Image 1 (cartoon, rainbow over the protein chains, first blue to last red):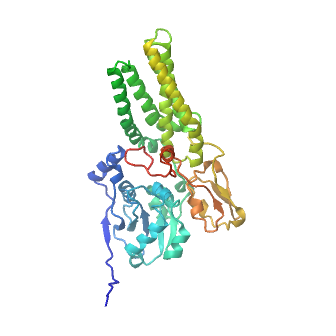
Image 2 (image 1 turned 135 degrees about the vertical axis):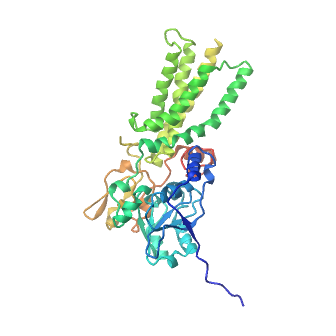
Image 3 (image 1 turned 90 degrees about the vertical axis):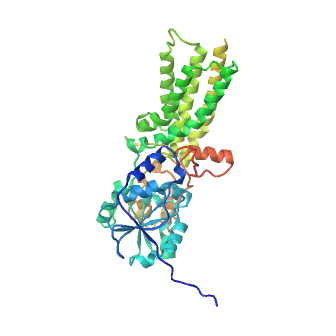
Length: 334
Length: 98
């Protein structure tokens, strides 16, 4: 006879609200893109403080940066944390992909046997998990009721103390200067791989005697990269216009004029008019492209909107860079 | 300063005859697109919609419709290049989205 042991062990992991040096170093590293896609905690049931059967249950993702930024806000609370397996991705993006989703939550509830740990039937989900989770489906399949908590972890304590009520402010996604600033290192680092390839090609052209590429090209290009990947994101709401590519182009254009001005153009130009025009075509286009890529990091762009801006921006950027490069090459020959 | 993205692009639709006024869409929307008026949900500012799909997913009465997608240029480019649906699926060497 086959005997099935129906009594599974309930595994609960103790965690704290304190972030140590290791946690802070880890957060700094992922912000700079070091081993970022492998920064995970084990999915499962965790406890903070000394929770009992009536303590609230908070659901989150298994990206360690997410898990840490939540638990550090829970000091003085006794709560359960249910960590879903989102493959090390934050709540909002995982919800978009469906890994922070209805199926995973139902499965995780079964694996952790949460119904045996708590006597109540309420789960607090981060509001940004809502694109992946059907609250009514969860209730239908598990009996647990889903309450959407605040957008930001720092509001959780107030939310619980107010009897699970979120204010309009707690429900709204913001994107303030600091939020944007912390995202810029990864944007900049992300451009370096392709930049090094471009430098390699230009260096080879120089070696073959085909390219006159020098110091001005180098700092002009690097400036355009910084304008697109750092300056535009930080100054985003203050730059006129709505499309990201446009905002990047505008600042890139100012940069190109500045580079030319620094080289004496138009009075005593250190290089030809063709080269100056080339810079005006190439640098803003680079900034525009990188600024456009920041749409993915922003919190207020839609698929339809990004598609609309790309249909215009992508051809314009390609044409501008190609013509600009040709002008620079021709300008160096004649 | 308030962020404002492109106008008249969102695919969000509300079928008010199906709405029971439960307020779930109002609760999950991260950009306050909805307001509850006369016991029904109303779209007060469609241009704030980011097409995340949270409202649709949590409306048990099928009163809402949107083509959900990621507002991420690098995801769309990747979709074009690989011929797949754009998804928030960044690898370690791509930009900062997810």
